[in-house]
Image (cartoon, rainbow, N blue to C red; front, side, top):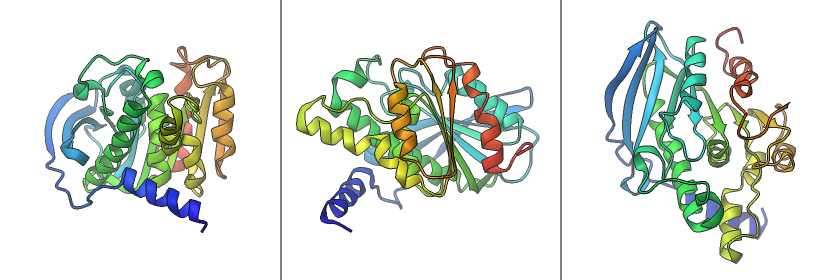
Length: 279
């Protein structure tokens, strides 16, 4: 391994490391039930004493361990958004368990209103929130993998827009994730903003850097042909860094009209990769 590779590895270990025996101090409460679906709110402690809230969705009737799908919401939205709950309900109906959390700076964790400017103007704030969210997903998986209804050998991740951008380092670094679908997300488009420190921050969280680390896992990329935010070029650049097994699905849409057609290829992919439903 070259000196540069060793340096990058140590930098990632410092950026994404956390004390594995840090108490989770998990709290749970029923958050709704109906139509055969049970929703539970959970809260755990992450790095820097951050409390992370999420929803766990599962069938009210199902029994035994089931595949777990972690779902990352887009920027400016949160765990309560239909953008993540609607597809999660469909995957639960097919036999999976789904969980979503408020990512750093969003939902119950927002200290101020969230706007798209947050992702363009302030690279250090973007870095802080991205690093924290990756660790939050790791801590969430630490917690959920110990739940008796979860099959910890069949874990998937689905990230929409920012959820996919922040989720890529998580999937790349955490080998417990067996399969992932990245929707309207790709390699970073923010290089050159924020000077040298901003470039280092961008490199540390660039999904394209983590794509090669996903080797051996099933990866799907679903993108809009007319996406003006995460451009087709950025999507292709991310995909080109992936190893087989991989698949790329182009849809006749942009970024903001991705739903509802955007999830149509995701469900069948997850069922095949995680072996539930008809997969």
